[in-house]
Image (tube, rainbow, N blue to C red):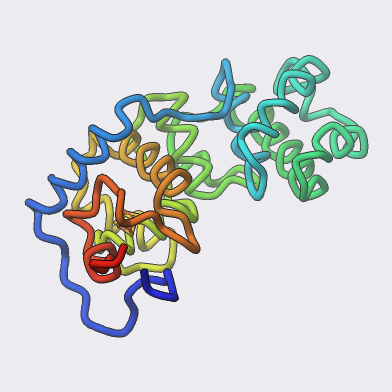
Length: 229
Ligand code: SF4
């Protein structure tokens, strides 16, 4: 295995061969047929909150925090009028708790004021909410509204660059590039499958290329796996 697990930089990038993209999609579907959102939620609002809390935090930790949080603040309006210090305390264990509490309260206020207390189901509206970027919006759209979306988090960006599905390091540019080559109906499942693959196999520092189910269609893996692996 190469000493660096970084991605290819510095040579020209050509859009991937559609047959290889198809093979990668088939491989992902075979490896992770049940890949799904790991955050617990019952409503779009609960998923929005959980997704905001999941930044720089594990999904398991978020799932430990949210039941008590939604018991304390049962409705969007309860979050909107929450005491900020109390809300900070309630989400403290997820890290970056001041920013997260501020974003959640701000989003709740905007939803109460502009959307009759209902989380909007359109990307253009979601990204106007405080603390909500395209990544969070796509998670909510895909998993709470059934609207296909590609979520480019750190795993998706890294794995897709290694697979040479894109060379973009900017999350939004990568999302648009992937939308060009992945069938729309696969956007949400593709995101879940790649996130799972990034967590379980294609690790940031030491991707487990020799045993990877995508190796045959992965330029990075082909380049770095040696006879000794
Ligand atoms: S072969 Fe698999 S683990 Fe290795 S870089 Fe490619 S996708 Fe990641």
